[in-house]
Image 1 (tube, rainbow, N blue to C red):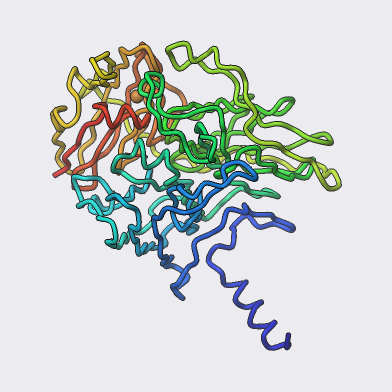
Image 2 (image 1 turned 90 degrees about the vertical axis):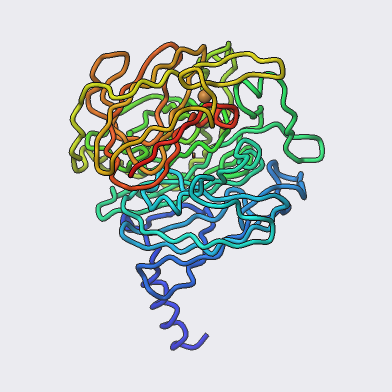
Length: 456
Ligand code: C2O
Ligand code: CU
């Protein structure tokens, strides 16, 4: 290669918009494939994205031709941007069914939110352009908002990373998109709906990290490894642990948290994100496990299960300091409850329904809120199982649990409301349009547990 083309390559590499802010010497980024940016403007990420049926191997050596993918990949390509960037997605639906894309956790104009209230289904063969600007840094994700119980379970999901101006310095960053399924003999996803999957959400004993079972990561002992986690499963809660190690929790749905803390488990419900730093120690292999967690209906009896392996390679490093604080946010003031939403479940002849104030969507009365106003919601879970509550379009502050103030306040877009308990949250509804809230166990959302907020 001639010197001039080498120089050109070096220049191209140095102005790539996806260059991580935390790149220290020897920084290693996630190997999730990124969507190619077609726009020369470094502040615009412009990509093409196609939903299509394609081959995929969920386990090494067994490939199905019937996976539902974005751009032929599970997860779909990483959309990698910086806060303040504009994203334009030229989307084409090549699936045999209509679909839409919802940008989970992103504050955007309602017309771009991908719900049936705000856009028409994108028919097979049709296209749609999504276009919005990232207001917040964090890890977000994208998935369909039509027949989401089937479409998401079939493989339609991907991660969105929006880097902020002050990301923590680490030696390595991984994005882990978690999922579970039951594989049929031919390597395709079992979609059979028994009573358990109607109640708990479709899933199974094949645990996936970035679309693959039994994945191995290679980490250097003593290095700071940032794990950005998103749970794309329909129903499974992952309760992650790494024996002999603690997780330094630095962020969640709304980005970095002001006061990082240490935890030996990270519990992550469908839709949620958690951001942790782990410093792997030792030699040989470690196993990232999911430990039992009782989310109701005897689910606590499931045995621990391996999620991924870690091979420790390279010379041990002397551990460098972990971040102890990030900028504070102005927590929304607590206020008397404006609206109580009671979540429950009920057996019906052909399965179960999941209710909000005894009604099922679309019969749950919409909530009207004048633009710019704050509201406090109490989510009261009377059911025998946990429900992860998700609100579109806005973050909310979790101010109380079972009537006791939560300190520090957590800013989220998806929060676990444990069985037989309540969560109080406050949000400011400053973006007009119609927005959904729902349980993120997708079988629950599709069978009643959803509602609308109309901001005018
Ligand atoms: Cu990720 Cu309406 O959901
Ligand atoms: Cu639910």
